[in-house]
Length: 111
Length: 114
Image (cartoon, rainbow over the protein chains, first blue to last red):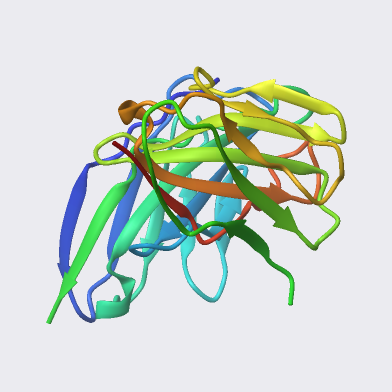
């Protein structure tokens, strides 16, 4: 299983772009990269998923370089409501259905 | 409304008193799992189930049991709880078992074992 490493915490201000990088050096060919967001006292919720290059949705963008050993979640113009813990998850397609979340990145957005 | 429900949401118990935390999903999902969340340790998977009668250990299964007799339910059983099982527990489900499908999480159960 690919182990993930993320910064423990990040601080930002409203209106700025925030980039959170996740390292997954031993990612396998069939692994996908998924990001989740968790607010206090709530369960995590899906943000975005990708396999390679760039994926964008209404909430975020996900950048994955060619070697796929890292990925970057980009949150454009953050607001106070984006203060949360962000988890990077590398998941195996096909067999092997154990899911290993990392310790997450606590993002704090201030005025 | 599509959702994962857990009961109870809060539970305080004593060491050794068996307890069950229920989890139910109404989305006809194949895959269900349990996680515990502790400060500084992130989310750690306890057990998962790929379908009815199919369960397997996650990263921290010691002290826990699960069963999957029906597709929608996946209870977590602590036969003899200990203080080190004080934690925030989340149940999750996803449509498919064999792919990195989007996980839908329940609201959490905060367990305190004294």
